[in-house]
Length: 283
Image 1 (cartoon, helix red, strand yellow):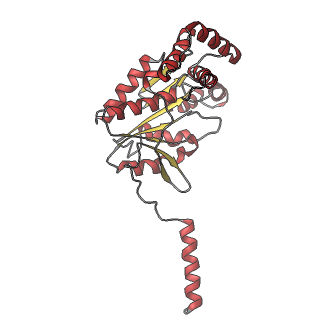
Image 2 (cartoon, one colour; image 1 turned 60 degrees about the horizontal axis):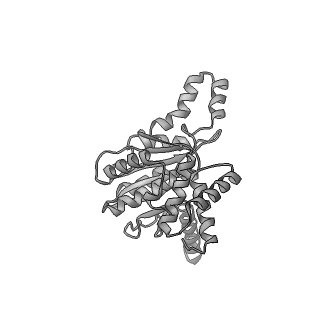
């Protein structure tokens, strides 16, 4: 078949093939920013020029885990051995805030370090992301916030080989940080169900919880005391220049946490936001 009809048919076939298998995206420009978000469909890294974060000094009540994560990240940024880190524990206690604040502090100290956020839903594509990062001259913290797995969720298998295993393994210029409310990343009822229904219960449970074993650092976050809660709010007020009497702050902050039924860094920030708004203070 020759002639104009044949050429038109071949052009349509070529267009269809391009839609099925599009050309590889251009290499990302890592000089654009210090932070990026990974998206799929198509695969791409989107630069984030203004990261939503708080200063490291404002994170109160997490001194020990702060120092450990900062030291690990500085080692990594300097080209030294460093561990993957799992930040787990009480909600609202600053797990994701600490990761972003540590990254900013490392940058402030003159190191070249990028942070790349990947959502839990995109974990099956993590191998493709590592291929992009492997050849880059920079060093990367690969960050997954609120990582957990539900029943019949197979995403954890994509992550296991990346953390510790596989032929290629994790690139030397990438370290993986994740936050979760669960120490073993699985709900307790899921683990109990495996124990009750599997042919070999111990092997089934081990296969599920072995993912968390691949993190060299387990950093626990626990509910804060009332004094720590008040210290958080006082730190926010001092940093923003908001003047308020200690007794008034204490009374209003305790009332606020009583209405919420909880104390945490998130609740402290929400109270401070309300206080700043009522005081006409821009934060």
